[in-house]
Image 1 (spheres, one colour):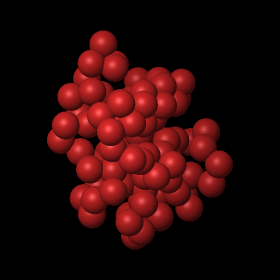
Image 2: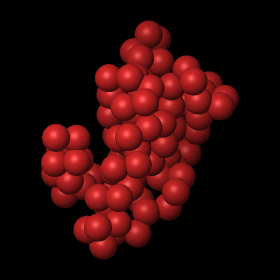
Image 3: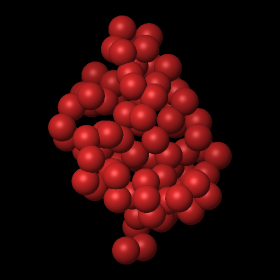
Length: 89
């Protein structure tokens, strides 16, 4: 199911574009899976994806506040996958 949903998202998202996308996952492990599968689906569609373009940002990430600041202010990451870190504030 995850792969099917993410395959469809790759048709609508641009990991190298200026727009930002926030994807919510059920758990931290699910967020890891979503990042991995999304990168795989972009590559399968022939879209080159910078490794920094899609990142997990959760409370378990290394330096989540720094990642969040980069997500807000820099071009990459363009797609962030989170659980609940960004919903609380």
